[in-house]
Length: 127
Image 1 (cartoon, rainbow, N blue to C red):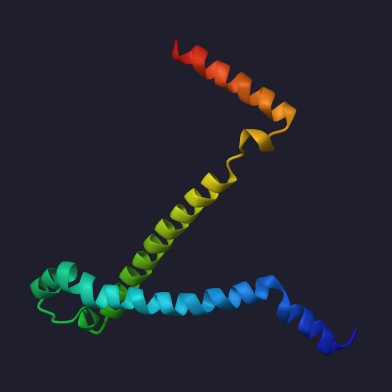
Image 2: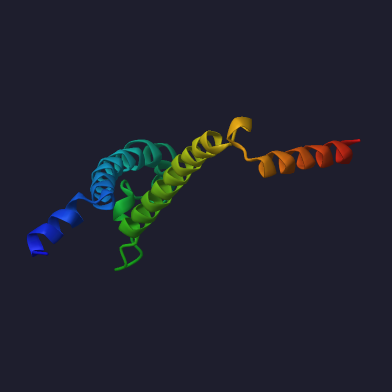
């Protein structure tokens, strides 16, 4: 197989396409999170802290020669991104679980019997 055919097979695989879409969406999502941190979180929550520290911008926080403000801002941004992704994945997983719940017509005879046994055990436990 020539390297052109190999490359074509590689590039057309679903994983490569899904990964490229994820990168593009991630870049767009990053700008949303940057705006959230800079335009919402910083003025509402961090402004009082930076005002108390005598600094107008979190990026300018420093202790002597050590400028820790940018690291603090990047850490807050990372935590927000991780939290929002956690919520998004949790929501998607709930949708997947709801879609994957088997209905009675899809169950095999063994699964139906096991479901009946489970239901009977639940009833006995509640009485």
